[in-house]
Length: 57
Image 1: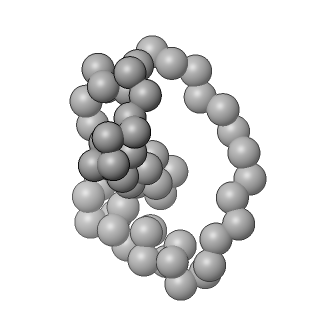
Image 2: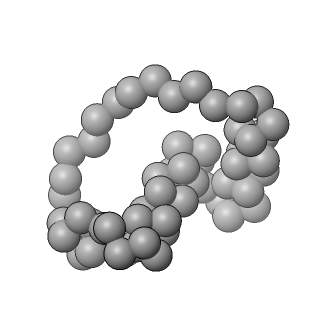
């Protein structure tokens, strides 16, 4: 499994609340939801790194 790197994220409060609600609806943490969203966007744009293609969310 690949290493995870921490970083600070500044995000609009309303967007964060929407992501938190979506995460709760999907039984994920907010961090997990953001990771899932980024993974989906990268995959849809065909910009997914090769090592992420093996990860199943």
